[in-house]
Image 1 (cartoon, rainbow, N blue to C red):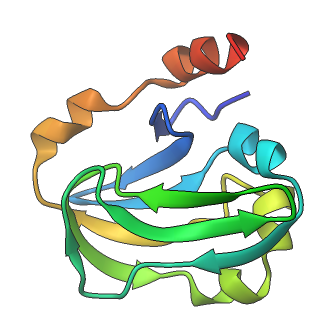
Image 2: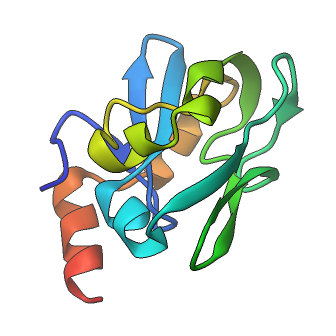
Length: 125
């Protein structure tokens, strides 16, 4: 079940809003689809990006996926510990944030899915 306080993308990212910033990670559905993770590339701190721009990658024994920015903004922090503890993404996907972004355009928040809408999306898979 997707946590109700988070927002989501069709690409299976979760977004936790914190004032004018947001923590970004991948959903339980995404991590279970990937399987055992082998590598995580995070965006550089200070990088400015646009929504849907490529920011990094996540790889598993099954597949490699590109990470895209769900919102435009500046990367404030990276979760460096996560790259050494990839199993945290599997065991606690909604606590294993990848990076924190300062939101540049709050109108983009309207493009995000609610937990209910995200659950409808994944139930179709």
